[in-house]
Amino acid sequence: MESSSEQARFNMIEQQIRPWDVFDRRVLDTMSRMPREAFVPDAYVGLAYADFEVPIGNGQSMMAPGIVARMLQALNVQPGDKVLEIGAGTGYTTACLADLGGKVISREIDATLAETARLNIDRQGLRNVEVRGGDALEQAHAEAPFDVIAVTGSLPSDQPLALLQEQLARGGRLFVVIGEAPVMEALLITRTGERHFRRESMFETSLPALANVPEPERFSF
Image (cartoon, rainbow, N blue to C red):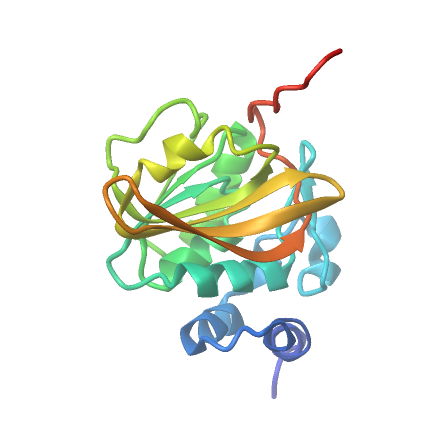
């Protein structure tokens, strides 16, 4: 007999994720078995599988399941890929990246959320993950280049992209949401050569901005 959580995960896949053109079997399997309710604050357990950005404190939220699924499908994480995640939150997307086989370094600027993510991920028995504190946009990581970079909060402008793109391996993929509310653009950026990057627009959405992200320059008259 299925538990209510298993039924909720099934409904999430069939009602939110598949209808949004997510058909990658590995992504569907990962999200079918990852207990999202284990990563949400207690007050929101009943909404763990809803098409809803669950608040996690300090103005941050978990991405809605459909956006997570589209991101994972686009990034095409393969076993052994080196993955950088910017914005661990409570660790749900981090855990999905690791479950797909990525060797994940996740940065979380909020110390409380970083510790929460570590505990949540550890409870899932995932060992190919390291959650670190600090600002991931201050400088390049010593472990670069990465096969995958996943940015789970938005950037108001293209300004930080150069730092992120330079940390991609040849053939590496970067998912990022650019812009300001109410409409932002989800992008997949692929490094195709030493100085060449392919930029694909995926869909429109809106996400809270990363903490400490540089504000776009404003023109004054």
